[in-house]
Image (tube, rainbow, N blue to C red; front, side, top):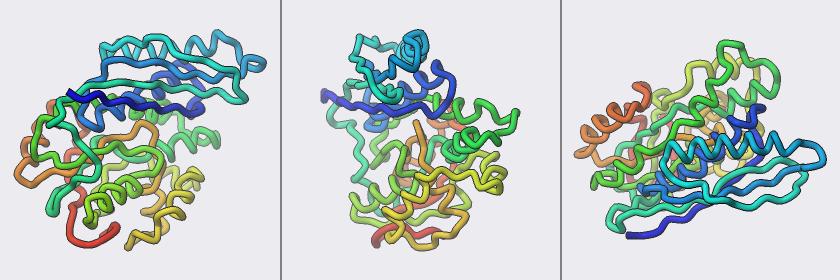
Length: 286
């Protein structure tokens, strides 16, 4: 067996402290699942402005993380806290995996098909909430997506035809797909209209709800991408928090993946390939 160790933390992206704790914990544990591992232990990392926010609110944040850890059946075994200018929370997580099952983000092969286990758009919805334009019927939808565990990764590790895997987070789908393609010395060809996206997203794009991180992402890697448009970049470079798993699947293992995805409750819109790996460099959007 191999030990996987990871840590992740950030400032609140939702107002509810309990949900903040749940999102942060789910996001941290996702790094273990993204390598195909099984989480076994977590400790918390808490920065709190004690002169401005009460300890009771911090307890709600930690309670959210505790409940996620209970769901995963791992202990939240203490942690460390400091006085900080802004609230910060996350976890350091350990996991285990059989060495032969480790999944990396730079081992895709030519002809592999690309899948994503969660729809894009949570950055756009949280931006809408910050701007005060989120519709009542859309309240909580981003949180629902961000708190879905990527525990399908444990089972994907056992499929030999899953050649590469990573979770999609702050660099957006394009950033993580580019990392996979470059690391594998291939090109990712992506059908922009086939990428799974939350149905509410276009409404908020029409209202100019787009996080600043999207444009920072494009500035950092846009030169490696052909086919970018003003509209598709706002979705495909949308920074995700606790996003889905980006998976490179051998054509011979697609049916096995789809069967597992359906059994695991992956949304129907996400059980569809939206691209493939080919000879070349960078990303081609078609």
